[in-house]
Each structure stands twice: as structure tokens, then as C-alpha cells.
Amino acid sequence: MTATTSADNRSRIGIDESGKGDYFGPLVIAAVHVTSDIEPDLKLMEVRDSKKVSDGRVLEIARDLRQVCKHSIVAIGPQRYNELYAKIGNLNRLLAWGHARALENLLERADCNLAISDQFGDERYILNALLEKGKRIQLVQRTKAEDDLAVAAASILARAEFLLRLKRLSEEVGTALPKGASNVELAARMVVKKHGKDRLGTVAKLHFKTTKSVLGKTEEA
Image (cartoon, rainbow, N blue to C red; front, side, top):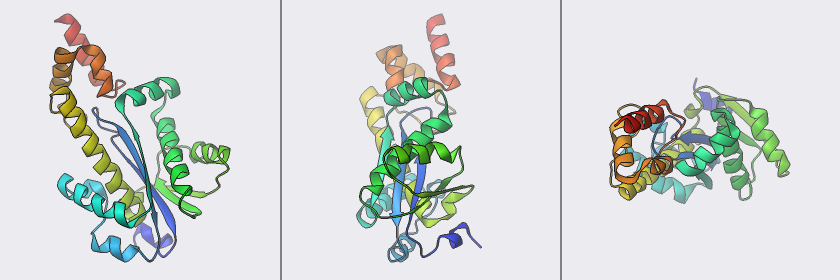
């Protein structure tokens, strides 16, 4: 039995994020509204957790998903991310803030009373943020939420937006910015060498340990 059974044939919003564990690039949260009548289309597209799909295929599926599903994408660029992280001081609360924004935006266009997301923190933070806007919705947080088709669709849209924005940032600084959080130090040092240390905050999430390592080495040099 998969995790989708509890929500099968129900109108629901899936929420997922991309970029949380990536040093470079934005944090992207996507919310996707899925109804029973469009589920067959998503299955034909072979929509599944973006971590199980190649980058090229993610971009292809995302193009179709944007046409088929009502959706909302909140992309928090590195500079804004760093500002929010400094203010909020907690990644789970920042994630909840982004989830609430994506949900709020989609609920303006989609009539739905159920949302599903991965388990990452206190759901009251999301619900309270929505209530401030007069929005009420049942929020289900659980592990392996990507097993649900709606959450899988959100993961595809979030990852596609992350990849597009990471590519754009790479072009802007003239350095290939790698995905993930390992093997990123060389690219970070190249950004600092070419553009100065302040530029790093426009392409990277500064609270990662990499920043201290990179700026420490730069200052020593």
C-alpha cells in the first residue's frame, strides 16, 4: 500500500521544496493542486519524486505540469534567503514560511481543503500564517510524502525552478555553480576571487559551513 491511498481520488494540494540542501541557488517551494480527473494525466507523464528523475526529464515533465495543474511557486533567491535566515534563525521555520506563502497563493485560485507535505517541522507555524490571511485548510505532514502524486508533482516543479535559477546564477557569475553541498568550495572561491566576498551572498546560502571555510581561506591568502 502506498502513501497515496489515503488521498486517492481526493482534491488535494501537494507541497514540496528544492534547494534546501544545496549550497548554491535558491530555496524553491512549489504547491500543486491535483484532482481525480487529472491524476491519469500525471501518471502518463510518469510523475514521481524528482530525486528519482534526471534533471533533463524533470525540466520536460515540469513544462507539461505547468499546463495541466494549478500551481504556485515561491522562489527565495540566495540574497533574500540569507536575509530571512538571519531574521528567522531557523531553517524549518523559514521552510514553513515558504510553504505558507505557496499555499496561500494557490488557495487564491484553487478550492481545496487538504494539503500534504513532507514532515519537517511544526505545522502550526504554517496554519497560523494562513489563518492570518483568513485561510483554513487541513495540513497533513508525513514522511515519504513524495509517494503521493500531488507532492511528487510539487517536487518536480520545485526542482525544475531550482535548476533554471541555478543555471542563470552560474551565467551571471561566469562560474559553474554545482548542485548539492559537497565539492562546492572551489566554485565558491572562484566567485569570491572574481567578484569579491560580498557577491557570494547573492549566489549561496551563507549559513552553510562552506562559507566560513571559503572566506577564511580567502582572508588568509
